[in-house]
Image (cartoon, rainbow over all chains, first blue to last red; front, top):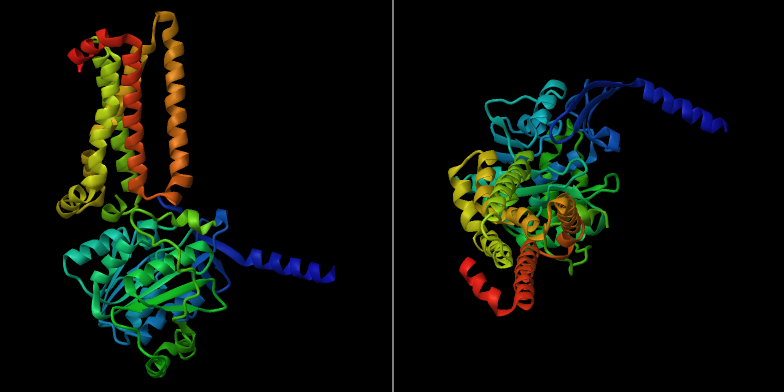
Length: 292
Length: 182
């Protein structure tokens, strides 16, 4: 009983400390910015119980708060010096901000479907465009298709468009991944942040395997996300990853990315049901599959 | 549409707008046509031509959407244009069915309201069932094109059943009459 009481008062104190800085209803979602102590978080669809999209420590902005955000930098083990970068899905902007900080000369394109998210990222999460970093408000599929037509090539592509409770089904299909492939430079890397649960996992894995032959599956016990990392060439041996991790460790330290732990976690083991159907533009019921 | 124009709010808006406009035109035209010697054969032709005009949605979807994607940069107007080219004609023809049905079914003024009510009931229940079935189950079991083929087959089937029923009911006499109107 006493313990219960202590915990209750603790939670009550936590609640009391959380302050809502901003609420906005965009055409896609409800956006809430909440601050608890020094930690400021962007939350989509709060009332439906969604989790934080991005958090930032206002007094220590370099540190990446979320495990999955840190994990997305594992792509640097395959492409350590990207010069052209595409980030699909802005959120609070911590991935592109970190990338432009790491590679100030790299050209970074960010594509985000929701203008309101761009505004909130700028107003509350210290996101800024600069000479080398531009945001386009567009559907990622349309942006990438046009990129393919104009012959655009990227060294580093981050797909981080699956926030909230609706999965954009057209960003999962074999045809979409082929379009992504078309804008990858010869030594470019693709980093896709996605889910690790449900039947959907099997379908998505089968689809990536069909398009890229093989990929690193990157999961950590601390995160419900999984990161898919792949490239056009065959994947490098683990020894090379370890060397690259050692080279990158120092520059990534200030963001709190434990890159040295990552090589051992990148797996090529097939842990999905290979008999599942490939997702295509004709068949992509991702939102139904996720609930099964 | 999503592979070319994305899944943004605008794309949904375009599709729904064009369907509504096409249905509106269809209602008007169907009503007009019902003034001129209405027959079951003309009625059946609505189903069959709608099925035929739905074929490009399957067969020429890419050939139609690619040039639109290339010429119209803004996905709002691109998706609007693609919706017009792909869906306007078949949806318009399907819109003709309801008013024409009223004309064929209504026997007297007193019954007209009741009949129209029943028609709205059937067609709206059908829309609800189709929407639910497609979004909850069909997309999980079938490819999009398989669902479209199913719809086309259903339209052709309905057209044939009407023709057959008309033939059985009226015999040869109305068949020659039908040819005049066909």
